[in-house]
Length: 469
Image (cartoon, rainbow, N blue to C red):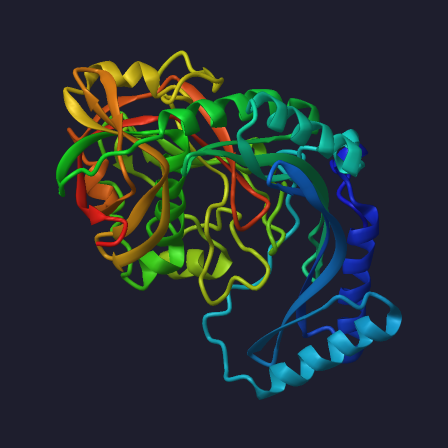
């Protein structure tokens, strides 16, 4: 077997693909031609510059190569992994995984392996970002702190790059690379925090000064907050808050396994959302790779089209159960939770542009405030937890700035609020009063992925108390 002819140039990762081929060959020698095997190899290099009290206090970097092996032999399936990529480590991986397969129960739902297929796109790769050093990240931190004008600052600037390879005994091979940069910072004054975040394919696109200025404006506007009673309020959610909606919808709504197990609210073919809502998962626009952990090519998956739920994210196993095809959303070790979209993009209003700075209402939300008679502007949702997965009722807190809006104008900062809200209900037909025209690309706090969101003006959001209620 050899690399796919279409995988040439910067998108390839021949070392990782060669490693995957060696693992598959070792399985064939150890278990015979009847064994079905797939190997996924990922080299991930993360470099992080942290700052607090307006000073850099940590520069860390790690680079790890992990090999995942899944094999199906005698009707049984097992998965193993290792970070030991020498001959002894790979031999041990094959031996352990074969031994595990013999102890596993039969797997009648085994979906088989991905056959040879060309990739639809290459990963986003920037050599300068992949090789960026601490000084280049520190420059963004310096600009952030300087632009904050003396406010206390904290956060991080990171660069990450991945090289991946795949091979299976059905003849599919693939390789790809991607690189990404991100910055997330806060500015603080008088107990009020302002936040600004950005992700990009290239470190040169990260504007520390613009982010620092935005965070400082929001922090100063958040001083002297007032209490607000519980109730139902119209809200303008900034992109940083919309991010939580996208993550919850991806992980607990449009995930194929959740839907198959009837833990999801999604009803395919129905107009469950306002016509203004169109939602896609597109790894090509979020630093993703051109294939998944099963070797399936990735591409654009339309989850919601003008309010109508149209698709789920699938790997081969959930797709077989649903009688459809994989959408390329298998991840290493994802069997317990299933295939999940990690590059969601909520399409903004027509004529969108990249988000830029502004006052307390940033990221395209300022234009939406004019339609608010009395409601809230919310920067962040955090510490969110699901109360009812079937209706996706979520409770959580506001963070990093919330303001009372009257007659289209911000009149006061508001203390942190607790909300309890069904996310699908908040986006239901007639509930979306407006979308921002600026699209923000935001980093994930827990993983090196990114999400795209505009601001949202929603008719109804349930506030159930303060931060302690």
